[in-house]
Length: 102
Image (cartoon, rainbow, N blue to C red):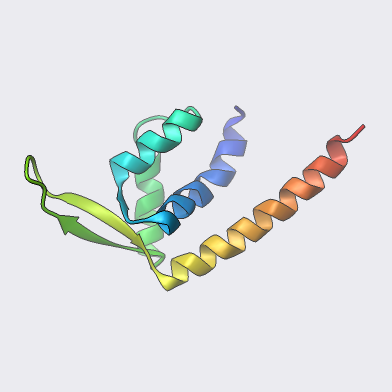
């Protein structure tokens, strides 16, 4: 898949996953990488940016085995960003289909 396509939609993928439930970085990265080819560290800068912008918060969850995991939770501001990006993406798909129709 074209790398520019991926760059344009990865933030939306991450927000979409966090809309469903709180998750930690590895789960997000692993799930996305099962659908499209991304390197292991691709998601973490996105999560850091989302946190810096106040779109997600983090908390630590103790595990019975191993170290505590940092979970990411979507904020109200993050939900608004998700809604806006989702709307824009759907518009983009509609326009793209228009140009690709024979």
